[in-house]
Amino acid sequence: MAQYHGSRYHTRRGKVDGDATYSQNVGGGFLSNVQSSNLVVAEESDDGFWRDDSGKVLHVSASDLERHAYCPLSWSLAREGKGGRGKAIDAGRQKHAEIHKKVENFKQKQTDLRKALIIWSWWFTIVVIFISDAIIFTTITDERAPIDIARYLSILSVVWLTAGLLAIYLPWRKWIDLPIEKSEELDELKNLDESAIPRTFEPHGFIGGWRQGGRVEAGLLMGATIFGLHAIGLYGAEDKEQAGFILVTVAMIWTLLASWQLQRALLADNALEVARINAGIEENTDIAYSDDEATAGLLSDEKTGLRGRPDQIVIVDGEFIPVEQKTGKIPEKPHKSHKMQLLAYLHLVESTTGRNPPYGVIKYGNENLHQIDWDDHNKHLLFSATKEVQRLMVKGGAERNHNRKGKCESCSRRYACDSSLV
Image (tube, rainbow, N blue to C red):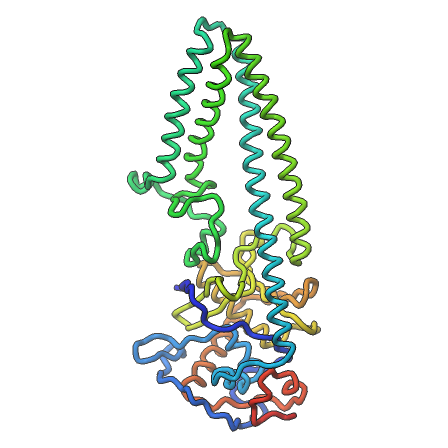
């Protein structure tokens, strides 16, 4: 089962271009002069993963897999503390920060729109109820004065308000053992707390959810509001005709307020569309997660040792889709190192949510999108690479697996590599 970790595990990688296979030797291979000085003590288990003396699997980050797929020597140097250097690294980090800021702005606009629409729907419902009651008051034959009805409504309003507040803050569903439906969306990221996915409308510890059992609480609060407004309107009425007039007047006032709230919702919808375009997000897409390199939750699977933070997790047609955003030069097809990193995120999303994502996305810029299927073949590639990285962590011996000068020229750790071709 995947786990959530609030602390940092790795530093976001810089821009890395090129591709590579992740076999131990390619074309005979090239021995490295760099010998790892931080080997770990572990043994290979029956499932092929490497575990230490306590039985815990060795941790491998998605960035480890990316570096290893690019060049095992680059991964080995990074493990020894040789950080990436170059303008591309700094530019990549700055670009990732800008992307995250745009995504967070999009998420905030989504929240603003949902709040505006909920408030408008409540206010419009009150308008309809007031108009209906005005018609009823002017047609019924009841000898009771409006002031008497106002008193009853005041009592009902207080009772319903009290019941609504108690329903929110008391765990009454647990007391009566009421089953709660599982959410089909964000609740399925069950191992990520609000530091990864902030709460919107629910107080901390609230059980039920406004879209599920929370309808009970919402109904009680709505009833308290309606009864209270009726009581206020009827206190000043001397007969039923005057009461009907007061209710119609109040309905007109609430209609103006609802119209104002609708205008706010339309403006929020326009702002959301602008933010969506700026962030390069497809239509009808929700953002469930975004990595800000500081507070985003770390996804972890203790069965394989994989860890990582995808740039985003989006919800498309009810499915959680990891998205990895790459900056710099746009290639004709995804680099294998980038693909390997995304495969790690696909597995982490699956182990975290308990659902099988059909694919992941690598984005180069806003327009160049590449879909990577999450199938048996790619799962085999991921787990084979993970086990190989774990083996190197124990036994060392990372080797340069290519003979391409261009790849060495693009490597951000070339300054520390004795086997560089340039």
